[in-house]
Image (tube, rainbow, N blue to C red; front, side, top):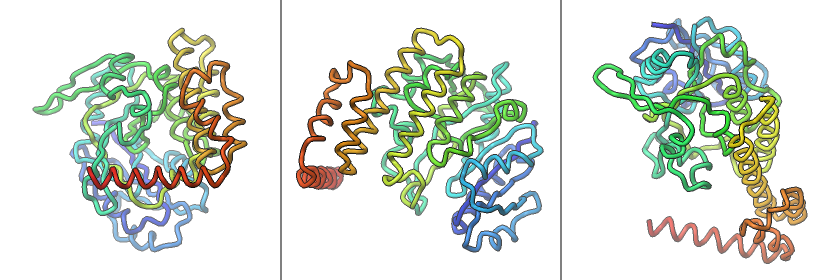
Length: 347
């Protein structure tokens, strides 16, 4: 069985780190090593790690961001494959075994991701689950994940033990223009491909996975396992918070424009997906500005969009609303929040 190095970046998550490491150690396909990269924690992370098994390696660095921490761990890893796990998330026991089986059954495929479960801070199961809960793409397009993947990728069934695992395999470069659907927490990648790619862009403090996966898909085909093999924790402070929404979308726009340059010639459907994906991001950015009462910022984004922006009713509504007084926008936002809470209470 190929050796797998697990990289776990962490920052002030001592309370959750032990559970994450335990989920990696409990894999049915034994891990080669676990590298914890402490990105400048000020809690008792070092004390927690000191009692862990010998195959757990601890590295402390000055706070440099998630991308830098992942790259640091990968740089010293010695496994044939690299896998990434965030310190507040968990893996299902068969995660690596299933992914390795899929990659080894698909010639030329050297990386893959999986579906997910969503858990609350206390570990309980959240209401919304899977790809739809983790990635806005599927809500925005109204297309279920399986149907979306089936449009672009080849469906395969892989035998793993007594079970048959469903996966979609192929070129994800075009589909990723519509929006990201890959999580670093589920990533398994061959070391050779990682070295060729160059790791995460350390200039990105948010939306780093969007840039990384599009660059990765630009050079190599991948596999998506439809089984939920990771548990992503929600409900605590995260870098992906409302205060970072504008910067996240701005970085995603940088990523999509950068990705359009990865290949000298884009196929027709890739050009279409690029333009549609970019317009969706611009609409989201304009809305984010409006939500933050930056009316001029919202109008400026709309004005930079393609001439056909007015055909989307949401763009028209944002543009009109950007001329409303700030007091009216605040009132509308409060009403929206109230209705959302009422709807949740009914459900």
